[in-house]
Length: 271
Image (cartoon, rainbow, N blue to C red; front, side):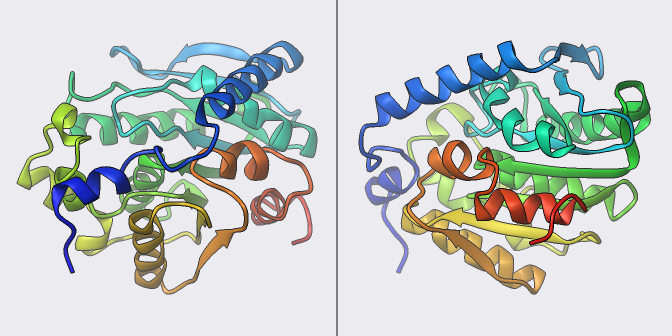
């Protein structure tokens, strides 16, 4: 049964997350600590447009590279805030690159997707400049970034990207249009059709880990399960995590099963 707009508002918000201001504060503090702890090249341009920069956390010569695409409903947040992921990758021997992209509604979805594709291409071409292995480039992203992982990998078609991790993503944009989020985004019917990975044929050639916080709203759980089925795999629910903590308390934490699985897919640990 299709939810009416008021119900979809709740599905597309974080209102259900307990102690949300404290979680946001903890995330910000962890990002600032990582920026202070690790060597980082900040705001490196991958092209000339507004917001087309990335942050690089090197991990030594020949390191596989994880390119992370942040969420924020395509309209907010930035790469610096996701620096807290560095402890989950750099000490294990993986370079981390967190990209920024131009935000909606100043640009349209096609520009966002194109920017992410260009960012990943830049990383592959320039990986050796920061010790990375251009033949071992992986992508991951959460929320809107999960959808952008799918879009990047579809366009890459196995050319550059060796694997992906789509985390609590939105793979069908139509429900977003029935929520308050679309007041800012203004998604059109053409954009919904063109940029909903669940609703079109895909050319994704590399393996994708589809994962979602077990405490997400029903719509995020539904879409993750549906996207995994489309790819012929299973959606992994991460216990006791929500839209924020699946990153701060799982992906970013050495030894957590999600972190271990992602690193294993990069050839760094045994799953």
